[in-house]
Image 1 (spheres, one colour):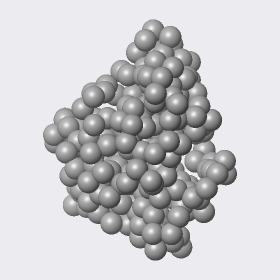
Image 2 (cartoon, rainbow, N blue to C red):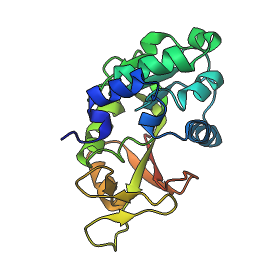
Image 3 (cartoon, one colour):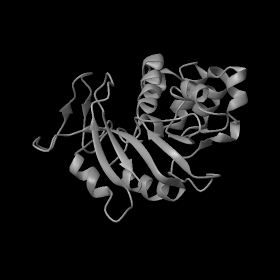
Image 4 (spheres, helix red, strand yellow):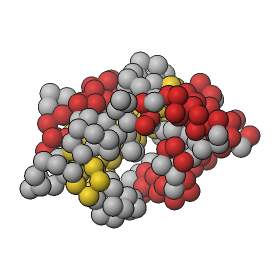
Length: 224
């Protein structure tokens, strides 16, 4: 069984062919795309910054961020090339494609950032670790650090399990999503997130609520 629906390329490809590339990444297209863009700008993202949008899907946030950033400064990765193709071909208008070289969208499911042409100032992993076991966060942090600039930041979301909650399913508010320790969607305790940073240069910083209608919490990982 796939770790998550995104790890079933046949199902994702079928959804894309049926024109459901927005739905397969969770819907709420305009609302969540704008939320991500507004959040990053409120946290200091500037047009000159180079951004890595990890798990960018079919460019739900990308269509907003490409407009905001200087030409060539948006990079997106996703497990499924079909979603990247759909976003680029169906969601971007001609002026946006002029600002975003197709080569800036990379199909990758291993957090392999060796392709990065220069350091990133900001990275975003929205709705990535809500669909992966906690060890994947460690892998991402290890492999992302070498391609980030000094004083850069990664923003990532998790479904948070409170420290005083016993093992088992947890229903989040708002949204009513039920998360699990060992099944999709996954939840993680913040103390376990902190543990993933051990021996790495990242400094975790809890942000928490950031306006997402389904309740995932935001965490910043700072590089000195």
